[in-house]
Image 1 (cartoon, rainbow, N blue to C red):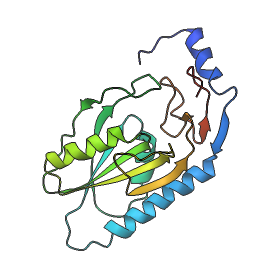
Image 2 (image 1 turned 90 degrees about the horizontal axis):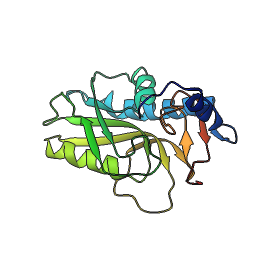
Image 3 (image 1 turned 135 degrees about the horizontal axis):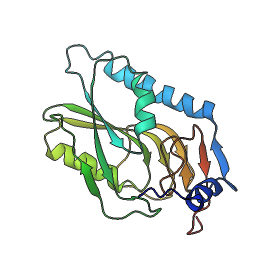
Image 4 (image 1 turned 30 degrees about the vertical axis):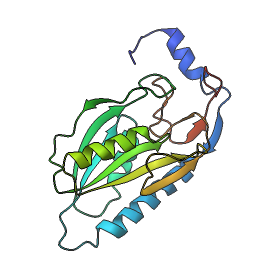
Length: 195
């Protein structure tokens, strides 16, 4: 999304929260991150003799989750990132686009992919398939949130922080039209399409 410095855009961004519904407060968000960290630590902190995993954050949505989760992990790891999207500034999914491919070598490694949300699952399914094609030995998916969309998804996450209702949500890395990734809690908002 292109940033335009105007009162109209600032007012529009603020108005997104006018009728928003709080889904999870700050404390629930932090408990969810603690839970994912604990489960990853149980698996990877006791894996004596195994090579340390490569952790890949999916930018930009996962930036908040990655930053806070990484400080809770107790095992050696290498961190890198990728930028894969199918939303852009829209609220409906589109074509998958790789903006940044990881620079780290994934061949023969366990790769932990961190993302903000497992929505329809198309993006993470594509990411997992691509990393396996690049030679990863295993791809582990850890998401801050899994949206309950009421139908099967092409991929499931190995580790999930929260399960969200099928609503358009913002906060903790998830945005609406490029805004509100910085909220520490999760809110459901009304979109221009009425969702």
